[in-house]
Length: 306
Image (cartoon, rainbow, N blue to C red; front, side, top):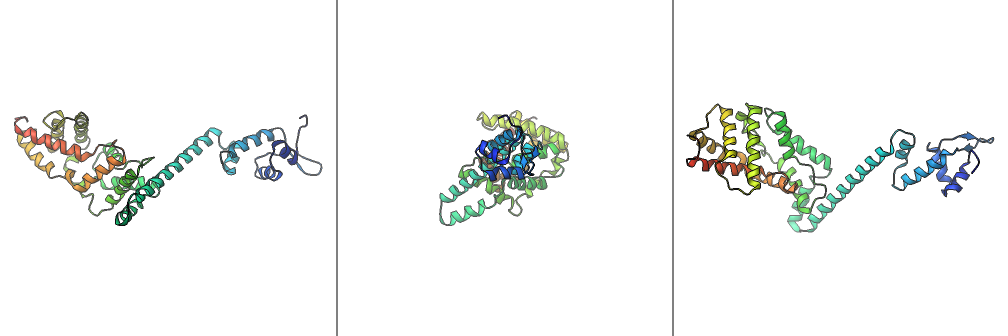
C-alpha cells in the first residue's frame, strides 16, 4: 500500500470486517480519524490497521469494547488488562465450582436432609461477603483487650477464606460456620479469658510458644504429658495472675481449663468445621486445648515443680 489514508470501506475490505463493524469502532473512538475527504468522509491513517488488529485480538478474548477503549487510549495498559481479566475469570470459575459443589451436596441426599443442607448452603452466596461476615463477627466478638496482632491471628484462623475448589463436604462445612455464628450465645466463651488478657502481649507471647510446641508435638504424634509445651502454657497463666508455677497452681489451673469453653461442643464443632473447610491447614484448637489439658493433668503426678 502506498496511500496515506483509507476510507472505512477500504479498512473493512482490507481487514475482512463488515463496514458496520469498522464504523462502530470509529464511532466508539477506537479508530482516530486522520483526515476528512473533500466530501467530509472520514479517512484513517496507517495506525488504524494496527489498531484494528489489536481490537480483533482483544475481542477474541471476549473483552468488552469499553475496556478495549481504555487500553487503546492509554488509560489502561495491556498488562493491567490481562491481569484484571484473568482475576475476573478465576473469580468466575470459583463461583462456578462453588455452585457445582452445592448442587452435588444437594444431589447426594433427599428429603429432610436435602432441605437442611439447602438452608445451610443458602448462607453462602457471595463469597467475598461470606468471608467478611465471618471476619466481622470475630473482630466484634473477641475481647477488645486482645492485642492487635493476636486479634488478627485468631480472626484469620476463625474466619478462613472460602475454598477455591470445594468438594461438596467442604462447601457444607464452610457454610455451617455461618450457621454456628448465628446461634444465640455461641460466642459467650470469648469473655472467659479477660483476666489473662490484662497482661496482653506478654501473656500471648508465651501462649504462642506453648501453641507452637503443642502443634509440633501433635504433628509428631506424641501423647500428652509433662514437658516444654505444658510448662510454657502454665508460665503464661501464672505470670498473668502474678502467681508462681507450683503444684498447687497447676492443680488450680487444671480445674479452670478443664471447665473452660475449650470443650464447649459448639466451639469444638466450629474448629472441626474450620479444619474441614481448610483441608486441615488450620489446627482444631480444641484438640490442642485438650492435649495441653491432659498434659497438665499428667504433670500433677509429681513431675511439676515443687
